[in-house]
Amino acid sequence: MTPFHLRQRLLRLLAAEHPGDYAAAYCRRLVRKSRSNFSYAFVFLPLDQKDALEAVYAFCRVVDDAADQQHDAAALEEWAQELARAFGRAPGPVRTPVGERLHAAATQFPIRYDDLARVVAGVRRDLAVTRYQSWDELRDYCEHVASAVGLVCIEIFGHATARTRAYATELGVAMQLTNILRDVAADARSGHIYLPADDRARFGVSDDDVLERRCTPSFRALMRFEAARARALYAAARGGLDQADRHRLFVAEIMADIYQALLSEILLHECDIMAVAPELRRRRKIALAMRSWYASHHPRAA
Image (tube, rainbow, N blue to C red; front, side, top):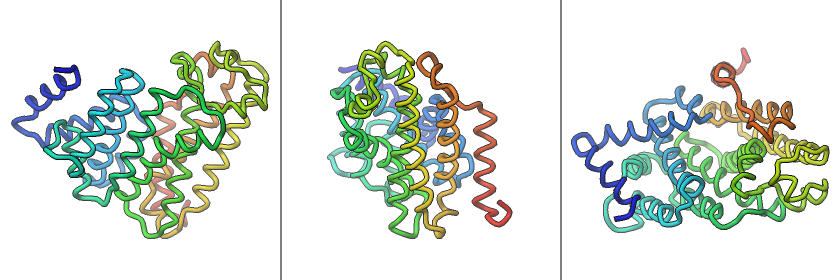
């Protein structure tokens, strides 16, 4: 029996008496344990949407961990099969608390299997791809691991217009690029360089500069260039959000505010970033979340 199967069998035994309650609590713990920025937005949601989003986030978390922490292709494929079972695309019942809650979410909301399958495909690249040649290549990766999640989320929030899918796509790319800029040093330690080779060549930043975490003037110029790209993506996303959907998508707008503030923090610490990844203080995230919520519910006052 593989470690993955052993862990899941133990979880099933623990969940035997109260499966629904245990599975929901399990997903909630994964969200809290990760200390994700998403948790600051989830608190404003109705319980059914919150539970569904926690299931989606928990699935993305375990899939990402299988690649980033465990480097376990077999575990990643097990989660791909669990996703298929949750959506009725593979025979047999779900085998994990995450799969159980994902199945419940997919039953209640029009979540698309293909979107979450794209997340798995994107994460699978992290096991094999350590460099990206061009922005087009990196953008495609971002659309898989981040925009696809956004497309799932808007089905849970509800949306009135087709334009909202373009909003979710652009916002997902912007947020993932922000994560990449924040995590340049951490990714370098694992041998990954996500900054496109074409851009690095343009600014004279070599692989060794990144892998050895040298904060040169050329590297700082590259970071400012990529940050400007991220800002343009945020502007394109938020500028294209239809007014009819703005109220429904206030959680996405909270995330946009938090990630744009994080992007500003990255630029303030462009040299220190090679030593410590910048983060926003908890109280600032709470303040941003409350301000975004108020603005979405009281547009005239905002």
